[in-house]
Length: 161
Image 1: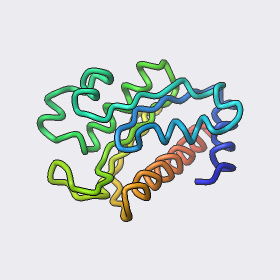
Image 2: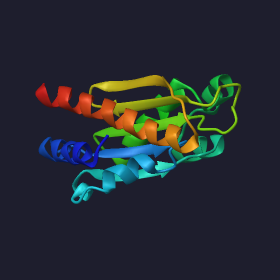
Image 3: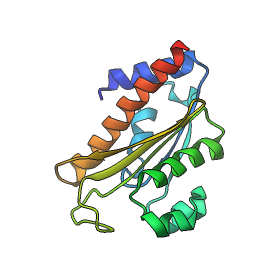
């Protein structure tokens, strides 16, 4: 996703009087950073939480411990819970979340490149799995691009209704 695309996303959110917050694991703040790189992003970006460990997901975001013990942290249900928590904790219109395995080693018996992203908003919560390739930086940056692309599509669709 280009800076121009992110700028257009920020303008679209501003025009809808909407806001966004993030809950990030494998991206470590890269999603929020991409958003706040746009001048005027403070009109729509409420904040972000980096919850890199299972304990942080539970303590900071309220992800149910039994969800993590049953499915692990790299799971679309965990991503959905994180996105909803970001939305709730920051009082934002939308919550975005990332969790996954960037490498170099597998985690929780999930291969490198297994990623789950989620978007929570007024129309509900959507999560999806991504299977990305490349080194650690490539996977992390690809996650940001994929999530923001999905978010642009969702915001455009919801702005029409």
